[in-house]
Image 1: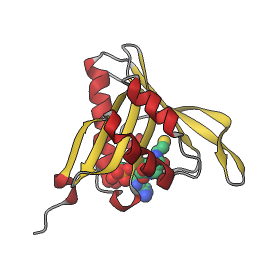
Image 2: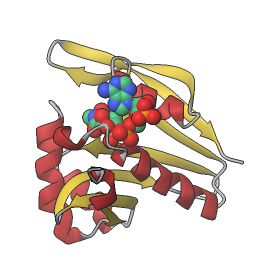
Image 3: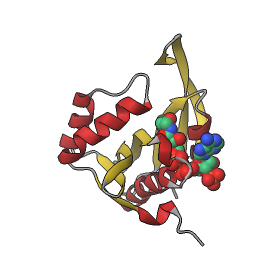
Length: 154
Ligand SMILES: CC(C)(COP(=O)(O)OP(=O)(O)OC[C@H]1O[C@@H](n2cnc3c(N)ncnc32)[C@H](O)[C@@H]1OP(=O)(O)O)[C@@H](O)C(=O)NCCC(=O)NCCS
């Protein structure tokens, strides 16, 4: 029986030394990536951010802001080659766990209306659609709406 890739993925907090690797992955993953400066600010300001690595190579990250009442997931990205191995789920669970520790009551996030994999992931974790933001994202053809999701924590 072959070992599952997920067994070899390591998770930890994001540090400033990870900035270049994260920025590279961000650029590979999105047509309109976050800038290096935005990522740098998030790390510098100690956002609640976690990294997934495989053989010391960055394969995923999540950036969120957790506060006692309301928390926000701002970015969740898994390297294309490593998707569908449970990495996105694990990173999401790390943030949900931190929210529980800090007694956050809700988690909010946005995703593109056409982002089927993200929608399936969030709905699997019981995020509920609460609205839309018109023309929230840029696309190569113009603009695309965002769906706003909310998860209520026990
Ligand atoms: C969305 C994303 C983070 C998911 O990461 P992942 O590591 O592949 O996710 P997981 O392997 O943990 O999958 C979790 C669930 O997501 C859903 N899912 C993942 N990929 C899917 C796909 N291609 N189609 C349908 N559902 C999918 C499934 O419900 C899956 O649960 P299951 O394995 O029990 O069926 C990843 O696809 C990604 O980085 N996409 C590009 C960046 C992005 O769009 N980020 C989200 C911005 S809001």
